Structures are given as C-alpha cells and as structure tokens.
Image (cartoon, rainbow, N blue to C red; front, side, top):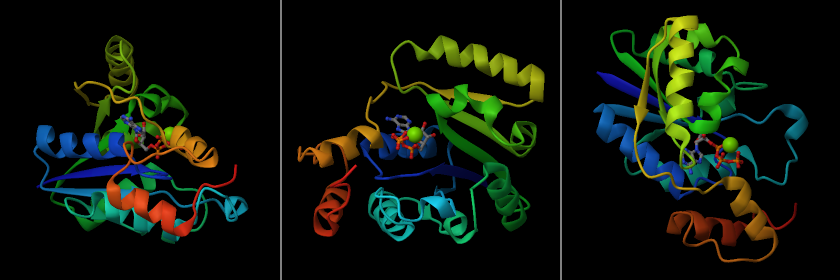
Length: 199
Ligand code: ATP
Ligand code: MG
C-alpha cells in the first residue's frame, strides 16, 4: 500500500491544505493519508493560536471525510519531529511505502530539519508550490537533496493557492470574513469558539 503523511500546525487548516491533501492522494495514488497536527512545545501551551484539541478538531472537520486525522504528534511531549513520526508509521505499516507531503517553504528549508537523510531514507518527499515561479527553485533543491541524501522527491504541479494560516489569523484579529479561505465547518468552529481574536 501507499501511505501518505501530511503534517503541519494547521492553526487553522485552510483551503490550500485541503486542495493539496486531495491532490496528493490522487496524483500519488495513496491508499491511506494520515493528517497529523503537530504538538505544541510546552512553552507555547497558552498560545493564542488555539489549543492542540482545537487544532485536532478543526483538522477532523477539514480532512476527516477523506483522510485519517491522527493525534500521534500531539500526544508526544515536546517538539514534533517528522523523522520520528515516519519511524512510527514505518513500524505501524512495515510492508508499505511512505510518502511525505510538504509545501514549498518546508521543502526549500529541508536542510534545517532534524535528520533530513533519515527522512529521505524512509519516504519519498512530495512537494507543492505555494507561489508562482517556485517550480525551478524546487527542482534545483530536489537535485541537491538527491545528491546529498540519495533521496527521491516528486513535484506535484498545480496552480499555487496563496493562502496561509498566518494570514487567516490576522484577518480574524481584525474581524474580516475568512469563510472563502477555510472549509465551512472550520469557519463555523472558529466563530463558535472565538479563536484567533487576539494576536
Ligand atoms: P502558518 O502561516 O501558521 O505557518 P501555513 O499556512 O504555512 O500556516 P502550516 O500548518 O504551517 O500552514 O503548513 C503545513 C504544511 O502545509 C506545510 O508543509 C506547508 O508548506 C503546507 N502549506 C500550507 N499552506 C499551503 C498552500 N497554500 N499551498 C501549499 N502548501 C501549503
Ligand atoms: Mg507554515
């Protein structure tokens, strides 16, 4: 089986995340996709970004109809590391092939991740653009990673959707309508729980 991992803070999950998660399933032909909200480091526990519970619930609302939302990373204490999550998935699915989805910013900063070589040894890294004209930069980075780590990358071409959670949180603080940027149920959840009202 082909198993995918899509991790992030998801504070909140938005239409860019959902579009690329679906594209990931379709283009790679995944049998199962895990969406994994990252744990919050202890010193950020009172972060106005919303609690781990809220991020998990919003992820369930955004991705639950087509992916398995996992609380594995939020259950771990401290910072989430992708290589550890991949080790966990490898252990859980020893016979299967793993794929990791990352957006442009994460892909281009891959060298700063913990144990990038280990990540490439466990998974094919699938990347997507977040801005126009990113394709060349990402292809070049892919060649460097291949030489450095012997790892494989796949580039998913698509029209970039320039949405970020940071932008959405900022719009909430200033009382703007975000309903066109997030799934309907996520917008309702944010309203109901009064999330992201303050910076
Ligand atoms: P923040 O602004 O808080 O960093 P974000 O929008 O970048 O939020 P994250 O939860 O940080 O969302 O991202 C999770 C993953 O989704 C990362 O790999 C990121 O690159 C990717 N991603 C986020 N937004 C998009 C988008 N619009 N298009 C493609 N990939 C995206
Ligand atoms: Mg981000």
